Image (cartoon, rainbow, N blue to C red; front, top):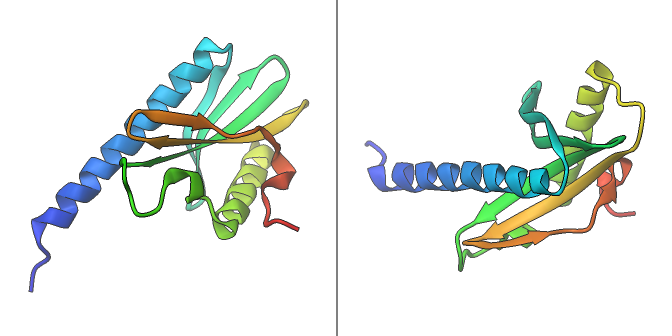
Length: 130
């Protein structure tokens, strides 16, 4: 039995929307003075969405995008397991490209055209809540 094409189209649309959200997030942060260091950086099987720098700060940005009215909103889409994976990916990235100054993390969530920049966190605070 073959899979129906509808989930494939939906998945492709979701992927394009996620890429659009990442690009728009980059531009919004670029206007705030950040410069691109990396986009969709692969560390083994893990991926870091955006890596940006401003002054001495290196900021890793995780972009979550969901369609308006989605069952699970983008604000809730970063669970403890994914936070641990992001920290492993960032540690691996920093092993290859050491950064001498402050490293921070920020989530940005999108729902339709609505964008929310979550508070900036320390990169080592990415692990599960204590």
